[in-house]
Amino acid sequence: MEQAPHLARVDPTMLPRRHSASRTWALVPGLPGAQDGRCHRRVGLDFVWLGILLVFVSIMAPVPAVAQSPNILLIIADDQAWTDYGFMGHPEVRTPNLDRLARESLLFPRGYVTASLCCPSLASIITGRYPHEHRVVCNDPPRPAGLSAQEYYASAAYQSGRDRLTGFIESLPTLPRCLAEKGYRSFQSGKWWQGHFSRGGFTEGMTSGDSTTGGRHGDAGLEIGRRTLQPIYDFVDRSTRSSVPWLVWYAPMMPHDPHTPPERLLAYYKGRTNSLPVARYWGMIEWFDETCGQLLDFIDQRGLREQTIVVYVTDNGWITDPMTGRFAPRSKQSPYDGGLRTPIMVRWPGRIQPRIQQRPVSSIDIMPTLLDAAGVRRPDGLPGINLLDRRAVERRTAVFGACFTHDGVDLDRPVSGLRWRWVVSGNWKLIVPANPESGPEGVGIYDLSKDPREHVNREAAEPGRVRRLRRLLDQWWSAPL
Ligand SMILES: [Ca+2]
Image (cartoon, protein in one colour):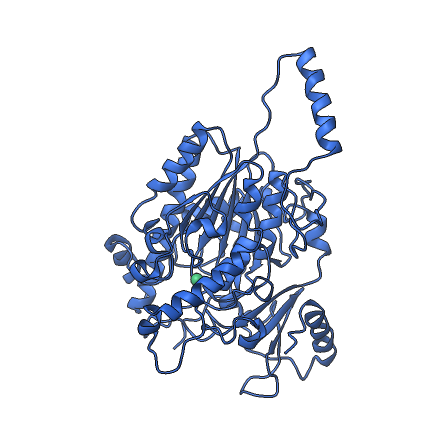
């Protein structure tokens, strides 16, 4: 009894005419990527010439205001299917605020996260790297046999494993760490698995990392959205008073379960489905949408609209089982689009013309996009591209990812927990199990333009395409044992 995702493409009536996909817009072209392994400001000759220019201008005229690096609001939904938005064509769910954001954004309806599980996916957003690269491939460290999940979460062994995973992130140049080199302050709120917020490079935040008292998803940070937005408002006001650019990580555990929407929303959706669990999930989506609207309104009220980039993504998908309220098989933790696909949006009024780009893109693109916009050199080896660089988006032939076990197997060997690798190229998607010879499901290839639910495996009819995509997948990551 899976709640089938409806299969509508983006509803063009939800978007203004200016969203013509044929329009071109030269958008903050990608700055040259540094290859020295550090995040640092652009220095050297550029700096010298800038200095000469500023001296000249100061002699000739009053000093103009120097454009400040843009603020960044990163909105990360939690466990929401790509279909479940008004602007993506859902017939029942109301998302007026995200619909408005879509109308004002460069919208990628075919975005993908790197993994269909929270922790690895969030780690990819904050590092710009694939799970096997940042090595946080699991939600939790390996659990010893005989321990229940709750016993394990309360144990010293669990804390030790968590610290190990956090250490992986701590050793990498994360988005907030890179932005700090340009003077950014950054605020963590909501979902955060990697210990104290500072271990990810945030200068401020809500999560203490004490999972023994506050759970393992982000402890006090999880109050954001469901209870309050005030900590974000206060942070933005503090940063504005100090005239420093800021990054806000808004990753509320919404619409993630517990699905406990306000009664007014639940009452509305109860009238639109026979499934109470589905009504609860839909109510959560609208509640989450309301918080996004409040944040966007706050930015407008503070006069920060033009100085703020807003990025939207979901950490992974979710399809509600209408009987149990749990996730359906082809969603979270699966290699199917119900778990991996998400709309990705980038709004920067006056700098990015709203339009729709149908090419597949990835959450690993968010970090290079934002670093380029902030004028911060990228760290060495980031695999993503600048989403504002149209040529780069159109040149790329495929996006990739991998799904791993919920609990780690061997933290020293990310491949040990591998379940599937997948690649999307054009309208086709190939899914390759870690061991194609075993298990009920082998290699699968799907034509997403005709079969977005991925129910018709075309492997027998498309041997050449399977070979080509398999080659691309192996070139990306061959998953050596
Ligand atoms: Ca999630």
